[in-house]
Image (tube, rainbow, N blue to C red; front, top):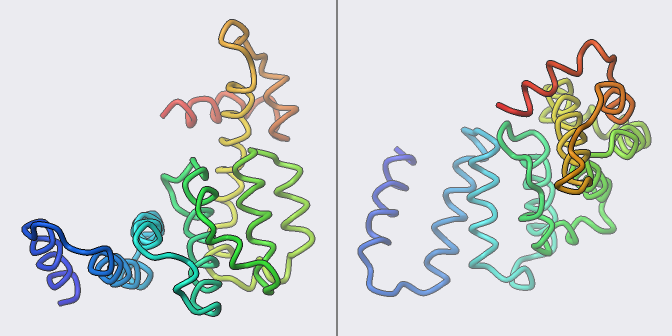
Length: 192
């Protein structure tokens, strides 16, 4: 029923001549809340970012902003097709986590953004109890580890000049902290 109502609302919005930002804010908040319940995380992430595009952070209660920051960080980290963290880092929403028990999630997002295995491992080790207490992370830990490996590979490629993109398997294995015999799998996964 909620899905049908949101589809109708989207259609109505597209027919309005110039709805105000508050209308879009309410619409994307409702869609984000719906996606938070039914998933998948990448859809919640998109709708949450759209909500933020129409809603100034200073208009939100601090508790609501930090909850949204936590949820968007979790969706970015666990979302299957999210490999670009620039969008969430460009918004002030992760700043709402500062001074909260979830502040470490900002470091985790940054570790993935940098494609840094060592930053990722350091952050997880330092916050192990909180990390595994969150079902979204505990249930997808292996997928998140594979994601950071793929991001590390992508960063290896883009850190080099366009004329210097020949990378040995041993370089990739060293940087991604995986055995050389798994590098081919990582490359095939990255290409897909």
